[in-house]
Length: 315
Image (tube, rainbow, N blue to C red; front, side):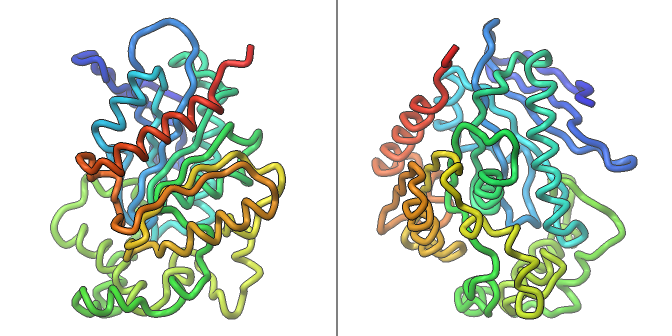
């Protein structure tokens, strides 16, 4: 595992692409960004967003923030994972676990990663998966950073019809949404075009309009099988051993409600886990891409400061 399939040395942020996992004939890939230098370096394991339905490992942190990670000496490993609705939640999390295991096992000799200094970071659904990693990965990551992620998937914000999607999007029919159910497992939506891409988007909108995302992503009914979901909700799995966590969330977020960050922070506090919640009243979803906003710049400063505190070389 870990076959190098591309190698670009055209710029200082050259990317190398590896296969970190195979499922039958399907290859699941990771892009590794590393500036030159011989020493072992700390790693940001980056998990893209897209509601577990869309997106790709090519969806990187915002440009200026990404550059700061590189300048600070981090290796950034951005992963694909199998996407819903064809793939269900348990398999998606399995991919994250396998990516982490591959990074720890192969990273030191493939790209001089320090396996003891890994932070898991993600945005939106990737932030949710980052929070899942706080209790599902072994050994635990050094720290977690969640940009507008969420700590539960069975709350009313996902299990009831969402007024925002009802009011701002055309009503999606079940017939259109279910065209996303194909026989083909996909690991990203980069190669999808036209109606195929639209079906993935329609599937998500339909689920939000009807409060069916837990059912369709999980493959179980949260009303009939609430116990099944317990292992997939970070807020219900926080213990005193949970990694230090940085939460960043906009109070005007219309996709992942701000309450999700507040509830997660309360649970971390209850268990004595070091954590920070950064928010602003005017931030919405994907606020971190507004890089000319001084409050966003300050938030990026605080992310770098948080990382420096927990990613030091203790040897």
